[in-house]
Image (cartoon, rainbow, N blue to C red; front, side, top):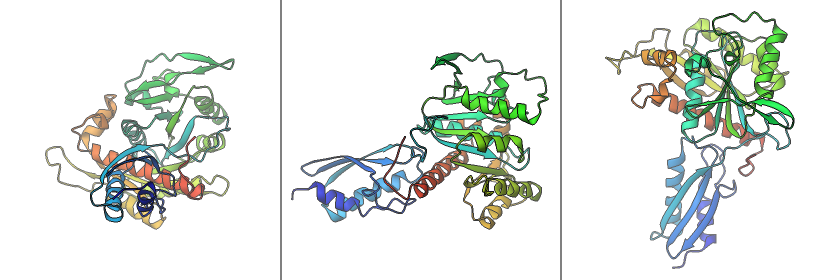
Length: 365
């Protein structure tokens, strides 16, 4: 029996993308289809290299062809990706950046910068072009967490303007106000000065082409946050909290800020950090020092996705202090939790983009 292109596409049109709820063919995700005898080869273009469902999609394609076309077919599926975006090609600011995600919290001390750093590195290691902007103007932590306290950045001339070239480390493009000021001295800036410095991190740098730009915001809901949403076209925000009520109360305020009708930035989900404590010598044990599942309950109550629950592990703190974030350690007990977080965030970005585009075919900038 000769296998036709029409038969294969009809079979693949029965495979539903789990997040976008439409079939792979109508979404434009099937590319480079080749048929030679009983050999069928094609690519599936995923919406992110960090897709958590890639293997299930691949298996569903193979099963569909075997059931609907030929049991004898030798099916080869190449999984590739093009990160989606709803940004327009003619947008002048951060033109080559597909998705910009703010990492926020209602209060300090919940590990927001640790989450942002490990998240950015994990996305980069999945194959995505990733940047991390340290927008915590008064307390920049990226220089310490990436072992980059005394870096000298270079610059380039673009269209008559001098642009700073972000530092590239661990696969992530980095920029922080901490690269330009004395780390040992406090920044005593009024709101307009801080907001102006924040804008320069985005407008005066050569960011190039990026799939994801992660923005580590300061705690609270102040001038910096308002300046960001007024300056930068955010894809969405994630809210980091710890399980105890004092942190959850402020996290709810952060959700309310982004949901305000004058701001209207989608909240992509909640991250519950320090969800439990696991000592290195007893990694299977869980001690709920700050309470149990507070972030999970908050996400459910506010109808938001729970992107991840990250345990409190001593090595995570040590890794940040040493300038080598935890996900760089392949033996880390925390690494799988950060990988799951990155996958779920990428998943939510794809879903959010598809909703904005009305579930059209895969779109890239």
